[in-house]
Length: 145
Image 1 (cartoon, rainbow, N blue to C red):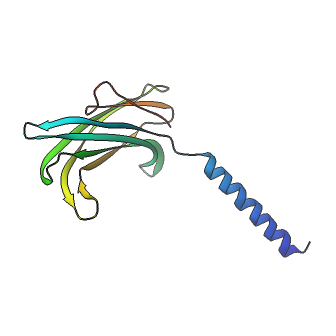
Image 2 (cartoon, rainbow, N blue to C red; image 1 turned 30 degrees about the horizontal axis):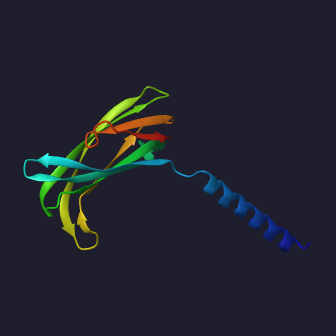
C-alpha cells in the first residue's frame, strides 16, 4: 500500500469514528403538551413547553445547562397579550436549584404566522434535573445533563 493510500485509509477511519461518536451522544430533551392558560383577564390561550440540554458559557468556560422554551398562542396577535412563566429547577444529584422568569408575547410574524415564543437558559450542572413551569401545574420536565 502506498503512503497516500495508507494516509487516506487512516483519514476515512478517523472520520467514521468521529461520526459514530457524534451520533452516540444525542441531546436529551423533554416536552409538555399544550395546555390552556389565562395570562390576564383579556388574554387566554394555550401554551406548550420543551427543554433540551445545551452548553452554556459562563465567565469564559462552558457549563452544563438546559434551555427551556414556551410557545404561546393567545389568539390575539397585536402584542397586547403576554405570558410570563416561572421555571423552577432542581438538580437531583447535586442539590443545586434555581428559578427564572421569562415572557412570551403573542404577535404576528410574516414567517411563522404568529410568534408567542420565549426561552431561558438554566445553568444546572451535570446530573438529573427536574424543571417545573408555572404554566403547567402538576407537570414537570425531566432532563439528564
